[in-house]
Picture 1: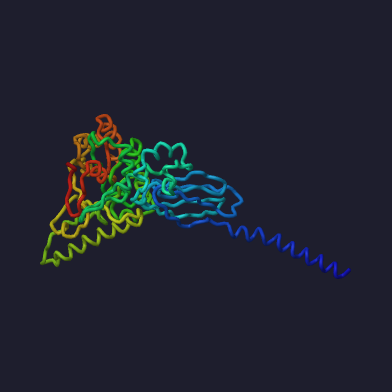
Picture 2: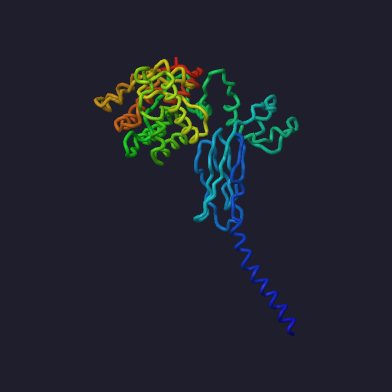
Length: 400
């Protein structure tokens, strides 16, 4: 009898231990199946939170233009790579959060199924899995629906020596939104994010919203020292990237880089060149950290240049062909609008995101351009649309 009691006691103890241990260990094992993934444009990947008892809320934390989410289920989602870049997916379960870093690379240039384009195009949209007998190879079944998005990436030509190409250039957006037979101008904004004061202002964000509302793009020349002032400033740059605008280098501060040599004061050519290089590299590093891109267009503070600058700068130097003159205190919003209305096809317009009057003027300018059939894009997009190349070390004021 005593043996039976001991046996039953042992069984009960084991059962209790098992009952307590299982849920605790399961809770500890709740995790994302991948913390980092790398995809090529057009590819898909399933993310899943293992051992999640509740429904997972999925969202794109950053890089919305590079990826999309679909097929959301209780604990999983499908990530699709849209274009080259970096993004992050957030999984939220109650107070717990998991993040997956996504790197999107270019699709392979080679397309073995190109010769059979005609039969594939007729069958693929309706029947993506059962392939016709004439094309029974592994290649056609590799994400046929992604072909339209891959095409713009594949057609990129190799860079010539000294040629610049913005890595965020979205040729698919150009093809979908731009009519190359109509006039095109590049709108640019200097001195952001925020402004030169200690308090953040939302003029740059208002300008971005006005551009987005009409489907226009622009280039924002950012001051490196402004970006690191606050999280609000960083968020302004991040939004510019997410909304498809071009980010570019406007030095690290507002000081002119066109310093003159003065040997008597110890201002040598070498010191000036070192200072220019240091400020550009610091800003490039900040922009690179935020975007993942390796190089950027450059515009000098105050749009002032010297011969020494051309010996140092390894980027296209963007000048101006249409001046808004918004930086002049006496120029009103109405005068800004009137000045920019003079822009013609191929012009590069200079404005500043640090002034409220400019933020007020932009919607009116965009409405005028729409009425006249003038398309508004970034500098890199302007040159891509016109089939022109941007070359490093060259000062460029317009696209002829």
